[in-house]
Amino acid sequence: MSGKFKAIGLVILVMLAFTLFAGCTGSETAPNGEQTAAATPAVESKGEVSIGYVLWDSEIASTNVLKQVFEKAGYDVELVAVDAGPLYQALADGEVDCSVSAWLPGTHSNYWDTYGDDIDLVGKSMEGTKIGLVVPTYVTIDSIEEMNDVADKFDGKITGIEPGAGIMQKTEQAIEDYGLVDYTLVSSSSAGMAAELAKAYKDEEWIVVTGWTPHWKFARYDLKYLEDPKGIYGGEEYIGTLARLGLEEEKPGVYEILGKFQWTADDMSSVMLEIEGGADEEEAAAAWIEANSDTVNSWIS
Image (cartoon, rainbow, N blue to C red; front, top):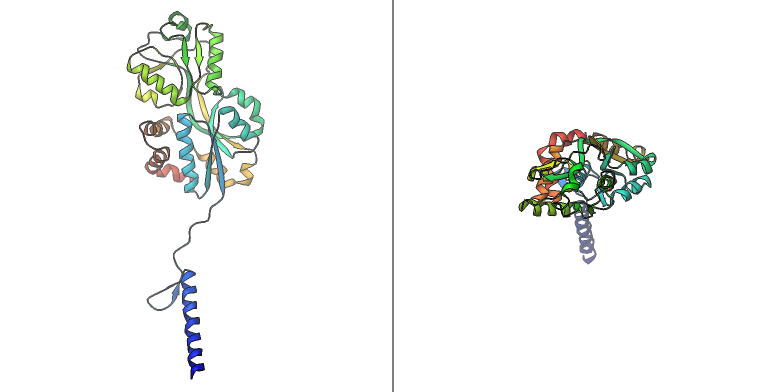
């Protein structure tokens, strides 16, 4: 009898093990007793994509939006923050996949002249951009040519951003070509420039900064570009979408989204304003994506 009970016990153990195994494989029992498949497993990643960008308010906004667009399409995304020069070199060397931080044809002309043959210009993510020297509207001059007559009012300084930025190189050229011998270009950062502008604007003090459009400061303050009769800062520009050579063949899905990624200055400004107002970068980008789902879906489809 003991042998019979052992056999029955063994059968029971085998059945229990089978039941546990079936549970682990995700099968479920339907009301009719048949086995059915469990919930659909998570979608497998389509791969990785790296986005290089510079820490300007405009590029922080666009890059975070693009990151979440790629994630919605099923990609794992790495963001790589660098200065403008190293960004172009990284793209040329194939160290990052893409970027939407190219200001062309003027602002980044020197970088494009150096690295352009080794980078794929995918298209334009935004048109109608501009750079130059910017002052509050209460400043009573209208042209860069007038700056030497009021150098004392500006404390002899132009407040800039990162030293390697294209707009800084253009401003150094402007100082030379306009003979602004009484001025010093002060390097800072995008955030530092904005903080100095806010402080001066509050007290209606004279200040001149390196500026570009789109930027949230034009929505927050009454500002104007100083006229540039020598054309140092160029005319209307665009923000270009760049990719490393070979990306189109190696990651066609990524390349297709890059080619479709286009939005307006108002779109970008709305994200920048949210961030400037205290929103997290990812939260601001997610809010824009949710409010513009049709546009985003057209990029991904």
